[in-house]
Length: 368
Image (cartoon, rainbow, N blue to C red; front, side, top):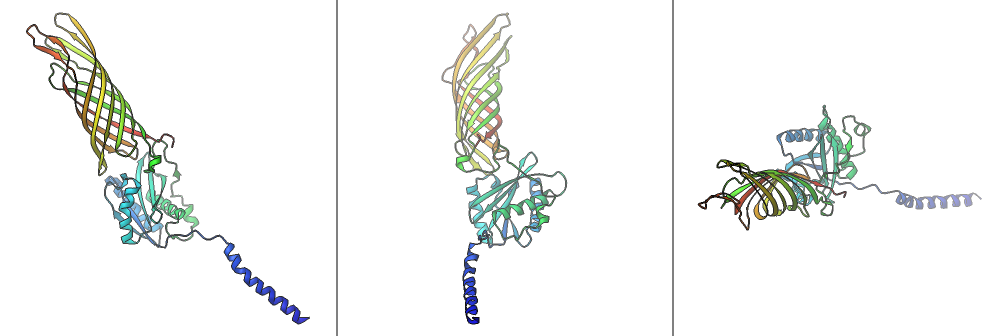
């Protein structure tokens, strides 16, 4: 009897030991994290004020990720304006040299908001968090704590278990969604904003083969399409005043409307883009000539011009840019309005003219 009970107990123990590995295998495996303990902080500050904030953020980040080596690296002043693929081209050699597993940087996006960027280098994956700025003290401390939690969520570095104090810290600013009109970061090509609105102040005048006043000035409103970075096509409508000037003992006044189409490409030169564009425009112009004798003459005509110029763009964030353009154009026909009895011309349109514009283009996300 006793031997039979001992044999039964031994067989149960053997079965229990055999089941232990199966039970362990049934437990969910922990999410893997990077073994590296090095984090790159990329300098992406475009202004001295932003550079000072970056320096304070570096100090706070080193405290927030205690046990991790935070190393600052300068990858060029235009780093923050590059698409993710080009940013990775610059980050990877620096990360390999230092054995880093992730890179982080901050960028101001206006409206009291800072964008916190984190790239997990092993996956070439970028995460972005919009952080509202606290006008009081502790802004950089809050950014550092937000960075710590973003690193933990991405499993980019082994930071150890989260502490209640770090999670519930009142200094950490709340995360906010990115504004719909402007994507927070350079999106994939399939999700990149393509359509935008343009507002430009315009002025034009004669260069050669004309008589009398020729300068017009006004405002242009347009829609711009950017299928790829650097390439643009813009359809615009402008209203202009002028030319206006004294002509002998008379006065010339005028106005015009113009429908224009422009297309060009700009190459990036650091943070700016510069390149050529071709413009075509059809216009309707009216002139009123009041002669000293009391006689009044009115003229109106349709015109067509082509122009070749340069387009300069200075980014104002991820999806807005300051635009300055200058062009030289020509008209296929020339009109004469006032001629004296001896054949001298007092007023005629130019064969060659110049134009300049200054304004802004803001891209929309199109609901993507």
